[in-house]
Image (cartoon, rainbow, N blue to C red; front, top):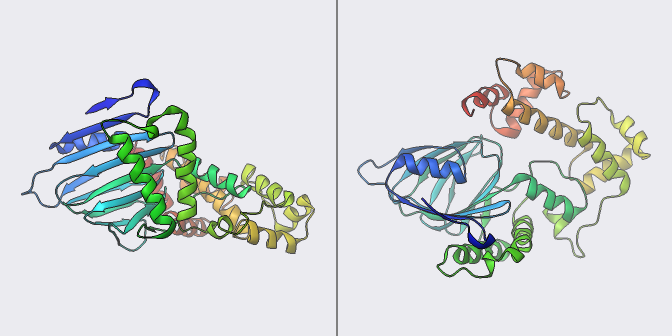
Length: 335
């Protein structure tokens, strides 16, 4: 493993190895903990990995030279795979098995067990890991409205034409510049923040998600009214607090009808759904950090406003693709 972090430039790293354990360690260091299965034991592993980081965005140029299966569990980050050659069969949570190619990239959510069922031997890709807080903050700034996390990004990114092609071309240019022998402007610390913003904003404009129509509206997205922002702030700051639509309307000095319509227009979902998502996110984070010897799923569910354990489990599985107990047990294995 070689690294270069001179002159304040983004950290770059490179690995060329035939050792499976070394490969696992380096992927875990820069991306995610993993388990790797060799699908063609008769063929040798030939890992070639180059990685650079620009603030909340990590970009890796990766190939293995043989067919592999990778199990990654939850990523904890947004992630996009832009294939330069070969193909990737993948699945996240309970979604269908999908295939990424050199014209259709794979887009992953922070939550949901992730399995790359077959990374073909001729597959080479640019793997882009994105800090969730950075992407969600960027979207909130663009909308001038707090957003529910995680952002429901569509699972595929068409980079054969349109905005998807533009964004992937930006990634290709930055990767070529960062990994070249003669670093250019992409490595200049003075351009770091503008480049970060360009990559985050570009993905939000190119990818499919519930907020995209508002971002692409002629004239730009219209900021949510103060009353809607106040309602969102209240739900995010005290999600465990029991509250009805009537009470929320009274606090924000709106009619219930206006409150519902405002959420539909500026948030994309009703206030009750928004609150449930916030509560699920908080419960999910606590489950990931909790000690199953010290707490239970029921304790955490009740703490975040879910008195009915069966309904909580159903909502949780629908959102994260696993049961709450699976997340709680996985927290021990990851420590």
